[in-house]
Image (tube, rainbow, N blue to C red; front, side, top):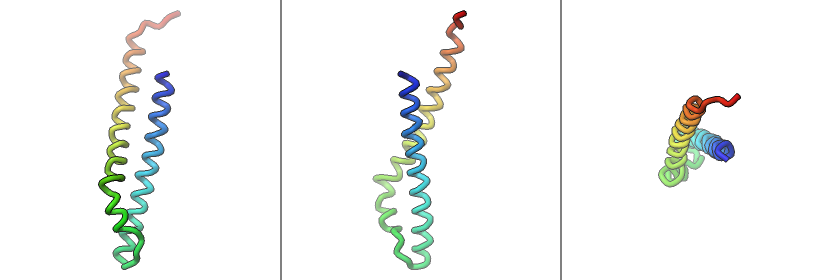
Length: 85
């Protein structure tokens, strides 16, 4: 059960990381377009920053911390349990 939960968490984090990377690529392209006076969606990206991209970045950071702490705790519990022959 815990392995499935960790696997699911890692999958969600992986998808979220790719979403954050794609949003950064969009930001870079839109910012370049804005500097060249081309409408490449910078205003839309800026409107989506707070309601969409900031929580996605926060989810990546929180998920990485939770995943790391969970793995560390499970490893410590496995070390404490006596190994059975």
